Length: 319
Ligand code: TXA
Ligand code: MG
Image (cartoon, rainbow, N blue to C red; front, side):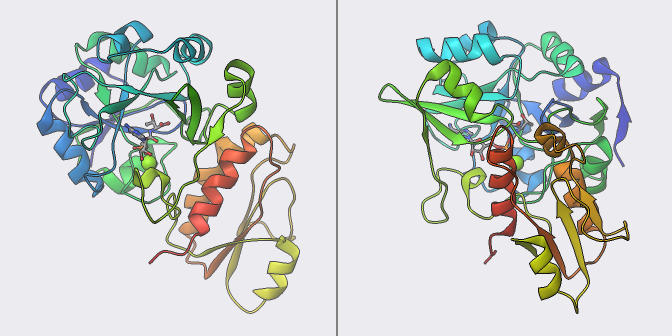
């Protein structure tokens, strides 16, 4: 079992020795290692059973630290960073050679962000290297938003979980790239499209697919609990699955009188609250030995789009 604690110096000790530490961020918990150290990065991939072609996100204490590791920082990136860092925004930028190729799966760009969590920012300021950190879950599973989620799945494989409480945002960062003067959203996430557009103007959204993934974070099937998920009209799905053991994940309404197998993401219809509760509710439902999880799409505004992206991918048929 990993030790769960708030000791930044202890976390630093492990990281300095090429060991991995789970760190809190405002989005989800990350499985962190020294971004400049190939040994630490290798153990990130091994611990998560993550394929080596899926590049990692590097975490920094500030935009000026980021600039030491990238070749260029376009003006629009500068504007976005000013507005949203520290925060749930990841930028894809041309990397310098100091970032090992294994971090970026051989790409000449690196994904970078400044996370908005006081403990992790304090830790990052004490280190003389950035932290590579994918979400701290086995590859393909639901991301962790509480220390015990990490403990349950990776606790036997790491020494330390830095306890920053439950994650405020609860859904991964928005990933943005820049291609031929265009702003491209690679992954919907904790900063809404509306917010991005308010700074960047029109943006393109990159569709994800199973054919030619740049990275599995963009695969259709991802973020998935073990239990089958079906999205649709909940009342109709209740009829369809009347004879099996089903659970319900709904936006703002209860659909049954009994409580135990249904999770309402936000009784107040607050889309941010729904995002914060999403992964935790999926994990709870997944632990109930259900035949199917019945759910519905959220309204398509704000973080609703990112939630829907995760639900659709969680429901995608796995091969
Ligand atoms: O909120 C988050 O972003 C969390 C916390 C821990 O910071 N991290 C996270 O990392 O979600 P991960 O490994 O689950 O997702 C990383 C994804 C990759 O799957 C890929 O889609 C994208 O980031 N990515 C990384 N480097 C890239 C690159 N050079 N070009 C394009 N996409 C990249
Ligand atoms: Mg992930």
